[in-house]
Image 1 (cartoon, rainbow, N blue to C red):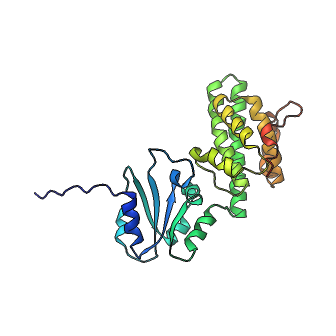
Image 2 (image 1 turned 30 degrees about the horizontal axis):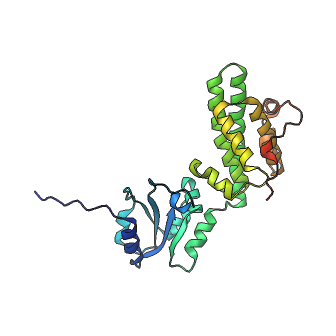
Amino acid sequence: MTHTTPQPPLSYDEFLARATADPAVAGLLLKGSRAHDGMTTEHSDHDVYVILADESPSELAALDGYRSADLDLVVTTVDGLRRLGGWERYALARAQVLLDRLDGEIADIVAAKARLSEDEAFHAAAGLLDAYANSLYRSVKNARVGQPLAAKLDAADSMGQLLELLFALDRRPRPYNKYLVWELERFPLPGWKTDALLDAVGHIAATGAVGLQQRLFARVEEVARRAGHSPTLDAWGDDLQLMRSLEPGSGTAASRPSGR
């Protein structure tokens, strides 16, 4: 019986040297905490996209999905990089370009991931607005009939939908929760005070506070209607009244201009 000697884990520096020497590699991207200034910890590995030139064979293709304490690899092609989206989009939007052998094409693809098209953003925002309104409505109804746990869970759900909505309205992919503060501190959402918005989101997610939910919705409704989403809101009919605050002057501090 033949025994194979286990190979030592591949280090980031070793891999980088190997990938850079491979002519089939069109580009290398670093994503995750090491691509976010100030977010690296002792537990951070190196998350790397390896971009192979289309139809160029490479031994590195076998390393797709490789994971160790130091290195996490995704191997794709230039065309595959163009098609990547969904949950990966934010990671790509903030990725650092380590190597670009295509005269800036890799960097251009990465830059495009950070900006939703006008149509893409509008249609995404319409669905997210409806989902946010639905969770808010359920939260307020559950609180009204003495179901505090259900009310808090619906409120927490609504905050995720709200954040995705606000980023879509700015034509940006929503950051992962880990990078939310990082993102907003460096790239605030136009028209929103970052600290106040984060405080409101955190408080609502933790407590399901009905009054704060309603005050925040009043501002969201204003912003959404200005962006052309009145049909989505009007479809809720009289149920909108339950989502709105009955207090006069119900604007929330999170709604004040950010100064940008």
